[in-house]
Image 1: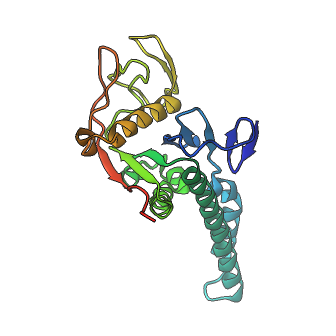
Image 2: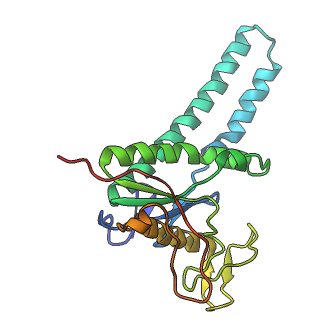
Image 3: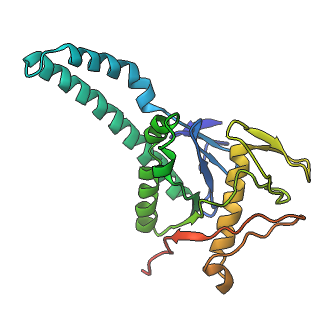
Length: 240
């Protein structure tokens, strides 16, 4: 097992393009795929926060309009630029790997603008760059002739059992593992969400007339998850 551009592969070779990965974006791990792989969150801003704070304190002590203040301001700007470039490089590498490994990629629609209103998580969510990551996936999928399926943001992927389809009434953000009360399956929160996102994406992308405009996810079991609608797809390969 070895690391390949931020993700773990078994046997040293990437997966076939026929596989359709789905992944759940998060804060602890940047993404967790439906087959259990995790992409670590590099937290670029957090790693540089101490240096940034020191440079900003130095700038604050300098007299306005002075040469020392201009030098200190240049150091702050350079530190921010390094963080921005490192984040952009990580997002480009990750999105390119995902586009190369599959013909269809399934992600969940996230209301990033609303999520950053949570002051406890705003900084780390902004540092992750989810909005830029989705933008890169969209244009790279279109350019490569891949298909990107975006699942409705209200689909309860974390609270739905990926084995039997049981839907929990409540699931707190602090709960990372839970056991289904119906089938007793033990779930990792992120992997379970990624599996549900994959199932919803497959239902949406199925080439039947009924599924083309958005279909419910069908599972075996007494309870069924809520409908997962296709928000956006970048369709298929261009003719030669």
